Amino acid sequence: MGLLNWLFGRKLVAAPEPERQEPALLGSVTVTIHAPPIVVKRVEAPESRPTGWKAAEEENRAALRRYYAEGNYPAPTKPETKAVQIEQPFPVIPVDKDFRFIALDVETANSWSGSICQIGLACVSRDGEITCQSFFVDPEQHFDDFNVRLTGISATTVRGAPTFRQIFPGLREMLKRQPVIQHSTFDSRAIAAAAENARQVSAGIHWMDSVQIARKAWPEFIGNGGHGLSHLKSKLQLDFQHHDAGEDARAAAQVVLRAEGVLGLPFRDILQKSARRKRAVTTGTAEVNTAGRLAGHVAVFTGMLPITRNAAEDLAAELGIVTVKAVSKKVTLLIVGDQDPSVLAGHTKSASHRKAEDLIAQGHDIQIIDARAFLELVDRG
Image (cartoon, rainbow, N blue to C red):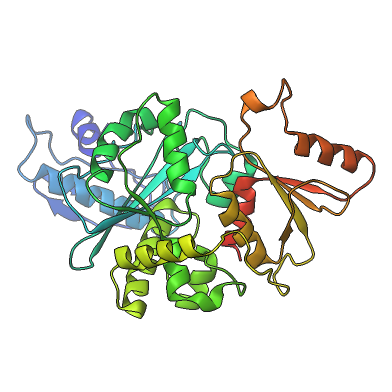
């Protein structure tokens, strides 16, 4: 009940004890504040609220706040309230706008590439202006502790967010209208996996890789920190928060624009030169960086990776990892991608995976990590 409602509903008499007064004439109402208890005296009881009653009520509240602030009486505490689930706003996707290119990044809830829980878009206009947008997605999947620690996104974060099947139709129409930049090829694989799971078609999106663009612009980083966003952030002094989809998308867009400035070429021409070079040389044979952070490790890749096998071996070489084709006692790392049940002959794991586990049981020091964790190692340089 408001203070004036209470005031006008009862007739009170001031207490006779000594008082400290702060009178204020408010229409036909006088407020008198005493040392406790507080006594409010009504001069007369009008039949209706006086003119300016809202101002009078606010003055009464202000007087009480001053009184509490002076320590005369404990201020009222705010009652506890229960958390209420609020629907997150449905993302507004500008499907009718054309951009020079769009950089896209996703974060996932677990090691499955299709478990998208956040999508970031950095839309680059013809004059180079970057407009960013990011939104959470309910992956309808469990969250791994590793991913939660990495991104800060949990099941609680995405509660009330739209699902991928709800947002992808509009997103697909937007992406089909212009080139889409991703930093490595994980994002396109994630979109394809999530679309397949939602029984939707992801074909028709023209993907381009900003890692390939960065390699052409800054070849000195090959074998010397690599071209992951974490290393480029340091070397190019990019200002962004890593592992936030919107921030990473913006960083990928900035990498492309910076590379164009360094080489004096538009990104399409940079990638065409890179493609011609790839046709002329064998990939997957990069010289191992003996000073790399993981120098001394010997790795085997198994299963379907988010990127090509040759590209994965090149990234491993930048970290100092030697890659071989088969698991043996010399191997220290097994990097596991998605498995195709049709080639496992009734097993749940590949032959390489099973052999590595046998060697571990015999006492050999082999670490088994998934492909997502490997790419995070690459990003951290």
